[in-house]
Image (tube, rainbow, N blue to C red):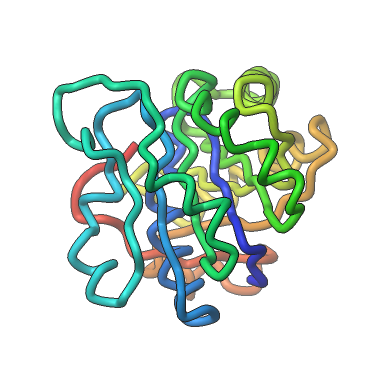
Length: 221
């Protein structure tokens, strides 16, 4: 994938944005030496990118997270370090925006600068198998709420439909009609369909633009 300087990921809680973010950060690092992964959700106190801190930092990937990450404190303030996403033009970033409209509130503080530079993608991560987004219409409701809260329009769709470790190749294949309908309703391109790396050989050639992933060791939002 050819990355813009800023790649933002939004979606419903449980859509799997954090797994996507961590895997994209590793891929981005192979393209750009100065790479960061940021968790922009300052409402939800559990920042799952921290679960991959050791492997990310070992690869030289900068982590940008709230000082309250993985604590019980809910402090909706944008840490100063977050502004590096827009101010440091040499840095390429993967940004986990957060779940739903509340998680996207912090994006609204950066969206004007992101739009002005116009070197970004904002991908909606969808998961057919989550109970609160079981159909394309419910996904559209979440998409519109995030755009309104974050004051930035999505540019594409990532299909991350999965059932965790129980996911089969058929589950991924059966999600394609769902993802294509979301693409049609939103007018946004279906950019990627993800799968766990062990499933990739079974799906290669059957789905376009597959994105094989390593899963984090613990469940992620």
